[in-house]
Length: 250
Image (tube, rainbow, N blue to C red; front, side, top):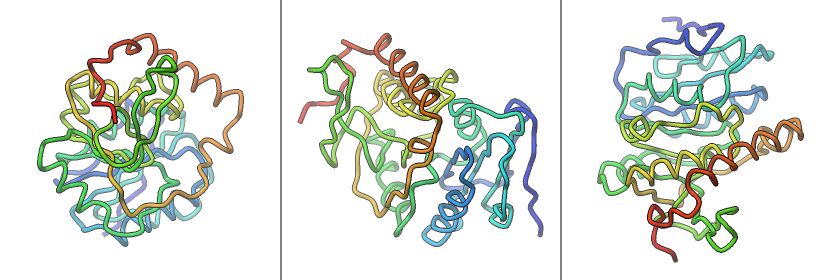
């Protein structure tokens, strides 16, 4: 059975991606660098069971190479030709996921083993609403302007290199900010939304590696810095000083 690459002009045109229910859905936003996305998809498929779906949104009209060959009964790829920002794209994938859990993941992250089994097992305990690979505690001593990686344990922030969340908790807290058209700091804002809604976040060691993060190192520097700053300014305006939402210090 052939599964087509779906093409829409705008993210608002996107509808249900699949009728099948899955245990978890991995959501990936692709802004160029299609070879990275292909390598990421192949590694996911090698290291996950068939009950884990993969939803991909490609923004704009890059050369798609052979990424359509990755489409199958659990892998769904959508292209938004007029472009779509990071927050809007991820929120759409979360909305249409047919699973209890959703993973927000960057295509620079590569599975090196069974990542999903321990993640799903942890989320099923319902002690934490989100678990991830990298994160940390907000540094309150420098005015909330940085995050310190303290290793595995409860954290304030999880990064979207790999961030798994209970889908309903993600929706209930408002999801990612639609004004975050660029990925950087959007995960911090989302994490603090979860904590503000009394969710708890856990950083875990997982069999992942990160290849070159083109979304940061090869982005237009002016665009990258301006959009990163806009998102962090929103974070400071809304959350700075609300220490009661933070995890215990360690």
